[in-house]
Length: 78
Image (cartoon, rainbow, N blue to C red; front, side, top):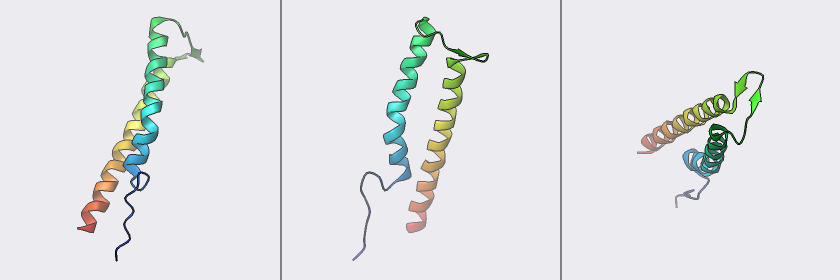
């Protein structure tokens, strides 16, 4: 009998989507507050928008890397 692990945390893509979605919503809400002027954050010449762009880019790159890694693993099983 084959031991299959098909639970929520078995795939790297599902783990990232599970953790990224709340972070993405939090970053978007903070960005909207910063744009509206309610949250004037400036850290050594960088605004909150700079950190949002850098953070979201890193998260998307990790998501795509794990997505293609999981596709590669699935294609090797076939």
